[in-house]
Image (tube, rainbow, N blue to C red; front, side, top):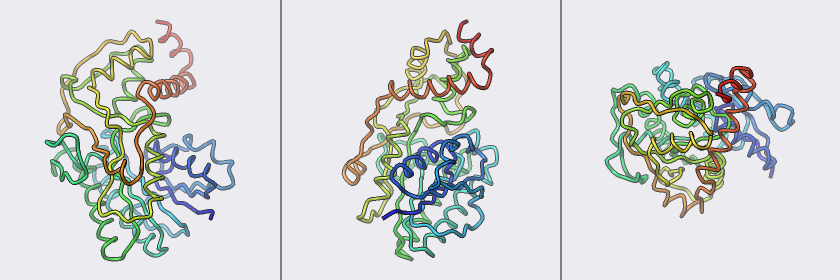
Length: 325
């Protein structure tokens, strides 16, 4: 049966890829975004599709639409963006969850919340399984995002218990790919832009902190499978790549793939920045039969090609000179 699917944050990085995937599966897609970090350009190729609708709306306000499923992705996800207005970030996570859960309750629709690996904070358990409760600063500069997402999870499971709502919660680990915001401050986008323009690659701390990077197509596959899962789950499910790499190794790999002359430049580590991050995806393997398939080099090449084209369109003459130098 053809479904009408709501994707909040649908013009963002992950949301735009999810909208495209849902359209390919012959769904009608309502994409909702307030364009704080999302971009109309991310969904420009979808606008001519009669099954796609774009609505400008802030999820901190109620939304009255008729849909069969809801993917709630609305919230700035990079530290630069979510720390710009921390109060609004917390409101987006909490009030956005309340409004989407209220809509799902009225419609008896299945609703999926995209949570984050940031709920684990700077972990003292490695890798992080879903039953690890985390080590999060509730007063630090990242708390607006970390605690907002933790509260949203609480609301989702309370709605499941109290109203028998069909919910799904995905804890997303570091994800990368085309449509990333060029000024989001994340390591992959930062390193690629710096490498392509010949700037120093800026690393924070000693560069030995580790991350695990999942290509966006793999993540979207996990989200779609989680939404489609028929059996109820009593806890969130991690979605991410369990292959771990240091930030320095990532920078060196990007320099090589970009054929860049950039050098490494070390700066002070930001407050509450986690030293290690790696998902335990046992639950995703067992319940969703899911694991990432795209290796890091392949995914980085696709992402580099995206940013190379983006830079060429925005500053063609300067970019060509920087590449030649």
